[in-house]
Length: 233
Length: 71
Image (cartoon, rainbow over all chains, first blue to last red):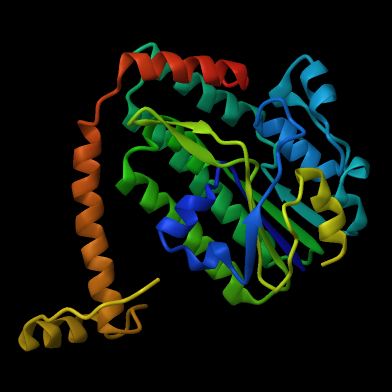
């Protein structure tokens, strides 16, 4: 079984700073996002899944967050049985992510506190974590889970180191548990990283992160290179 | 990650060792590291509550989030 741990906004410098050895694994590096006008979540994950730069088609769709690829257009089609949990551009829970964006608007409108906003992200994180580990016990050729708490919380609290450390520890624990299960190749990958905006906030950075539980030099792959990389694992 | 040695009273170490029996902590060091992190994170979170939300930064963030389709 191949496991893919998709982590929105996982930032390479934070993985290092917080000593996340399970996230950095045996090989790790940065991804090249130079082919995209902006590091947009749905665009990058759709490109990751399909093996081609989907920026034009995603931005041309009426609702970016509702954009959906068919399984036959993704690397999932190479697997007889797969599980894709909350993956943007494929199986993302539209209602939940709308709720998250509404909470973000609510924060700016002084209707939602940062704690209430964080709680929405963390509750969803727990649900995805449960589904992810349940799928890893199943009979699948590939399981991909998408976790977005680091991105959501980071936008409003990237400068609050304790909060970010807690989230990185949590994701490192998830990676560690998957590694200990010894199911096969584990790819940890992010769409983009995060950089500070002022002393408190966080903005998407221009490169993402990857790591593998084997020694492999992938160089600086583009998101669309991973379909081929996954096929070679 | 580099490591260092700290000294704590023997009696306290003994109590802590007894406390971690049957838990997931594989050593006294792992337990002490965990406790210390909890304390530091709590302090950082308290600090974070008062960390300023600057208006200028907020305006810039809103602009960026709009560009990326969040809001």
